[in-house]
Image (cartoon, rainbow, N blue to C red):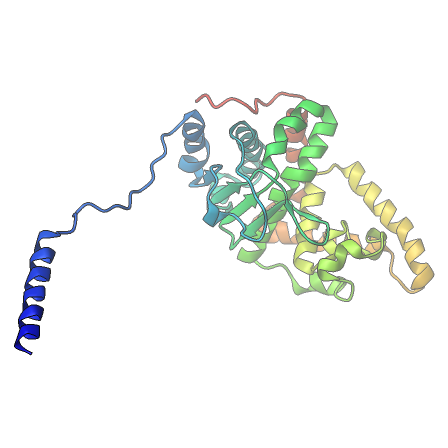
Length: 312
C-alpha cells in the first residue's frame, strides 16, 4: 500500500511540474480575417456606406446566405453592375421622390449578393428576399454581364426590371409595410382567392380574378407589394393593357363562376388603396415615382449610365 501511495504522490508531483512548464500561449490562435480593400470596396464605401449606412456585401458569406438552397458567390464584375443598378434605379430614385433623409431612414441597411438563382420545388425561382426590414438578398447576379451583351434599349430595361430591379422595389414595399401597415380592407378584397405557394399551379386567369401577377395570388402581403412594384416599374400604356386583359379574362372566369366580379375592377380597387397609402403614409405620389423610374430605366437602356466604372 505504501508503494502505491508513494507512486501516486510521485505522479502528482511530475504532473504538477509538467503543468507549470506547459504555460498557455497568451496569443490567441483565432485570428480575425482581414480583406484588403480594392477599388470596388472604396466605391461602395463612398456610394452606399458613408451616405446611407448601407453595407453592400458581394463577397460570399455563408451566414448571410440561405442554407436551404445551393448557392455560389457573386462574381466581381457582375457585382459592380448590380451595385450601379441598385444605386441608380433604386436608392437614387427614392432620394429624388422622397428625399435623402427618407432613404437613409428606411432603405435596408444591407444588400447581400449571390451568383445563382434560388430554385424552389414548385418550379419558381427566388429573385430576392427581405429580412426584418434590414437586409435584402439578391440572386442571379452572375447572369448580368451576359444580359448586357445580349439586350439593349427597351428590351434591356424590361429584362433588368423583371429579374432584378422590380424585386428590390417589391421587397422595399414590404419594409415600408412593416413600418406603417396598410388598411385591412386591402386584404379583404380577394381574401377568398389567395392560394399560398400553389399560386403557380392555378389556372392562367389570375388577372381575370383580380391579381396583377400570378405571384400576387399567394397572399395579401405579396399582392400589395406586387401592385406597387408592377405599377411603378411600367408605363401607363402597359398598365392599361393589364386592365384590358383582366377584363377579357374575366369572361372566361364567368363561364365557371357567373357572378365573378371583373378582374380590372378588383385590380383598380386595390390600386386605389395603394395610391392612398403611399401618399398619406409616406408623402409619395405613385405616378411621379413611376415617371422618375421610367426616365431612369430609359437612361440605362440607352447606355447613358456607366455600369462598370468604380472610379471615385
